[in-house]
Length: 509
Image (cartoon, rainbow, N blue to C red):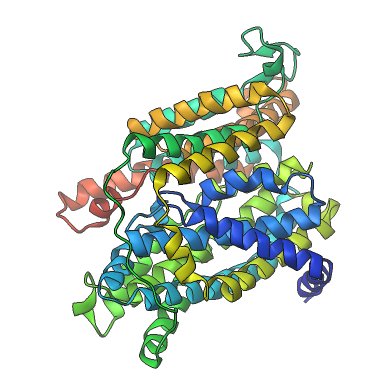
């Protein structure tokens, strides 16, 4: 009840005509960028991150929440209308949603995705309100060895278990950790990987790295594969749901929410697994199995709810432990750090007003998304008709402007180009970008805790497993790495249609 009262105080801080205007602007901007082909929520948030610069923290959080949910909704719109998911978590939505669109039911697919996202986002945010403070109160007592173990678990599991290739995942993680080393050594004060450049004496801006890898890299990739033929856009009427659509959607919305939130809330979660499980569950439970693969509304409602509930759940480890487990959460962490806010166990005690305002902002952004964007769905569909060269030229302009605005230094534009080319190369060779971003953000944090643990033990490595929690976490890591290959070997060869087969269809985001 105390948490709900604090959330009410956060709503009072966030609700004002000026703040609502920022929220609406964030929703529209987030959807505008998120709806572009091939652009997922993480890229949309990264690209629009500099837009919030210069605002007060409360206004920035509200606008940022709108961008976040707008980017999520834009991604599902593109998945349904163009069968072009901007991230791996939207693959399941695209399977049935695009089939519905081709059968003339695009409006119903967009409506069930939007309403399901609203329900899952609201329930998920309330789950964050309940669980994040409890986890933070426990996390206060976590020592440096256990924190190192939890960080290693997040990096290893996201890299090795959730990706489609362990080797590519670890290569990407290595690159991220390497980039995270740039700057002064904490103990000696000597520059690392500076190459004699004074601008590299400080750590690299996560904003520049994220915008370069996500926005510029994706834009260059799309430009390299630009199709001259115009896109075939499915016409969209006014989104609505009939009585039969409501009856078939409410169950998948709730089941998808129940599956998505726990996976997002664990420090090594993600949206891919719950969306896949939700799709399988709805396919198993439906009374219309013949429609799956041909445009079943349950196949859109469930995975889309699971995706948004998982996205809300990622706020639990992000706020309570300072651990981002998805690309979008990693970019959000960079946004919080830009305001001098370091998520973690002490955040809720040190800056409770900011935390509860942020959570209230998520509720406001989620509500405005439904109110504003659902009636505007036909407008967003027409946006897809704009020629891609003009669209991506605009993205390049705003990405460059955003990178320069970070420190008002032309060197950041050069870094943006370097990371853009790196992002292009990663897509060319199938390297996932999420481990790299996590390595950039979590690498310095893990280094700090590692040095702290070793300092306490006078340099003895045994300190790293001196706490019971650390031992348990290392056991979990071993089981997660060894368990799946062992089970596959025991079960024997698999045929098409199994989870592994679907896994290969996911995009490397």
